[in-house]
Length: 428
Image 1 (cartoon, rainbow, N blue to C red):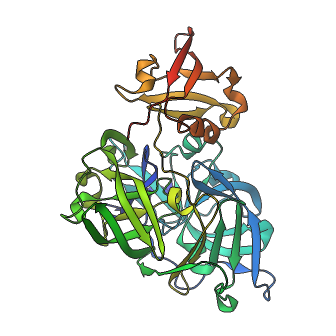
Image 2: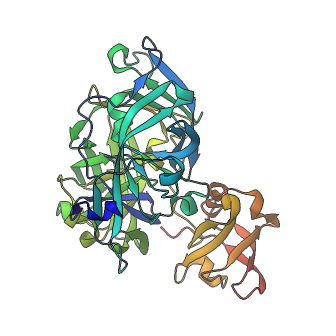
Image 3: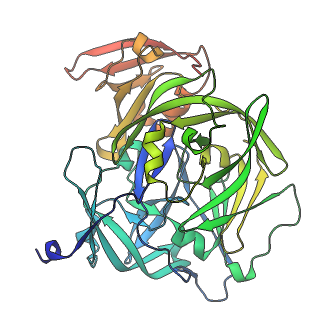
């Protein structure tokens, strides 16, 4: 194939680590420079804003997208990614994508290097065609190595990144599942209500904010955090970034997920508090990935990232054009930050992604005590068939209440059926 003769650039040191929650770490590419001019525009030309719905699945913003007039496809909206990605390689032929520069992505475990292709002039439209990028440059992955569909529990075809946020002032209402794209030239920030305004610094293809975190009872320290709507956790801190960031005394050693370089381990714990303008969030569940899992690939010094488990507690206005983040608390603001109280990871499989298989069981966890095993398929919870539940709904059940009992029916890999009782336990 002619494509194989194209020069390949090994993308060493350019991947970013992205938590979709405190149980899954996915490394994504950030290889191409962001567009110098806004890639998207509102139609018609005089339109000031457009409002559209989105899905909130496992703390991820999922938006319907049309590519080259086809769709809709499901894309995650992610401030942490510079170049928008097509993660489903099957779209290459169905959309007649034009293939250009080829990349080899190092570090996919022991497998052969992942190949990514640059595809330019992709017409991308959002909000029923009211927001359009006539010729967006995207990266097409040769393999769905991230299996985002299995993690989210619905078909996921790609990720939209900085291209959207550099083009619009993006307002996110998590409660209402509504997204508003404002034209930057005519946007005026809200004057009424209890809003916090935090300066954003754009470095490369990511947005950073500086704030204060209360690591323990005696130490408040400044931190620089990536604004990361594609991270499903609340907060992640990197101990190697500052000697003052220490692991909390009460912590849980756990598998945090899998990245391009293999499995990622670390700790879950809590920090005393985080300051966001006038707002103080307390007892934040925080991920502390092992230092060697993240520091080698950090192009800009930072202390961690701020994810959507925290951001969803606010009405959020992400304003790259004016270098600001606006926050106003919503009804979720006082919800506690909780970790999975069962101790297992699930992946969705099958047609419609409505079959749920255990991918990992934490040693010593309630799931382990209930004799659950990897490859078990969860058939029902409390006598309700899981085929009628979304993965997000099941996840909420597993986070629901310390001491709650769940009656779980599973089918073993051998076909044997097992009914077991799981008693949820707050582990951190």
